[in-house]
Amino acid sequence: MGRIAFARSGDKGGNSNVGIWTDNPQAWPWLRSFLSTERLTELLPEAAAGTVLRHEFPHLRAVHFVLPGLLGRGGSSNLRLDSIGKAVSEYLRARIVEVPVELLDHH
Image (cartoon, rainbow, N blue to C red; front, side):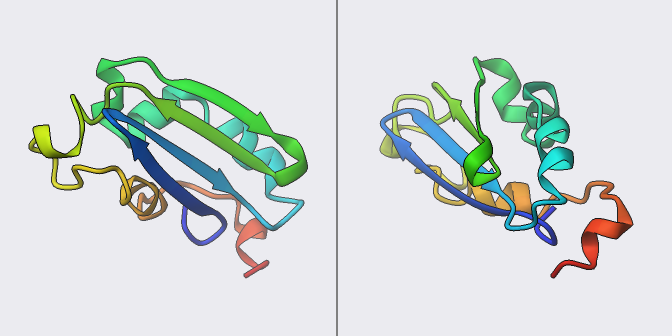
């Protein structure tokens, strides 16, 4: 997914968030429809155990997710490899997904 999208993530206590966007106007319709809450939980299975809140920002060509409780009680109290949520975005960008080939020519 990182071939067509950028991402940034963070945390606040036990909650994580991740925003994924594209600079390609032609890729926005695909990204918007592809990144449903269901798809996010397929790509990030740990999120399936909790609530996933999804927000769209069409003017930024972005989809934003809030993942309450993903980090347990917070960075110092869980056993996740990325205990503070900073790498959630790169983990998602590294996932191999099917992308329309015409969108790959932009970068």
